[in-house]
Length: 168
Image 1 (cartoon, one colour):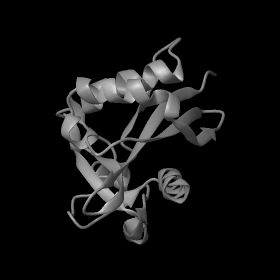
Image 2 (cartoon, rainbow, N blue to C red; image 1 turned 30 degrees about the vertical axis):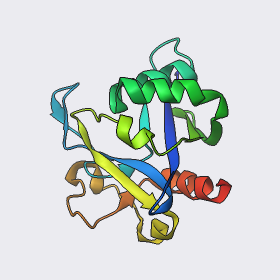
Image 3 (tube, rainbow, N blue to C red; image 1 turned 30 degrees about the horizontal axis):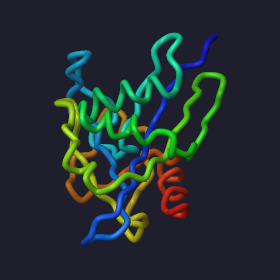
Image 4 (cartoon, one colour; image 1 turned 90 degrees about the vertical axis):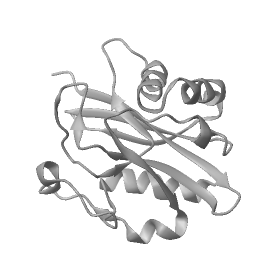
């Protein structure tokens, strides 16, 4: 069996008012690509995350996903700066192989993002907010997270987020 392969990107920037911030994306409520309700609705994830296509490299898949999820201008900025990206996390099981990259970009990235209509929105998180994050539970897969104050992440993505703040 060939494992499912995916790639992610966590973008960190420095906001003049808030200091160092991570840009996370909430999963939307409806998947317009597959025309069905989204699983894990409302869960916060790294800035971009998606499956690789057959024969696609991690870099090519990541740039495609950035273009789909954040728009063309953000894709161009990520492509120009990709050589500065660090591998932040690697997850490998017999069923799934995933690499998440970290990229620190200037705050102008915030003006370039045009979220896909399936997105649940962008979340700006400071290091001091890490303690607010709760781990995703299996019941969240179909029920989702709907409270504006609820902040839930997959445990491995929270660890990647903690690593990112420690590196910056």
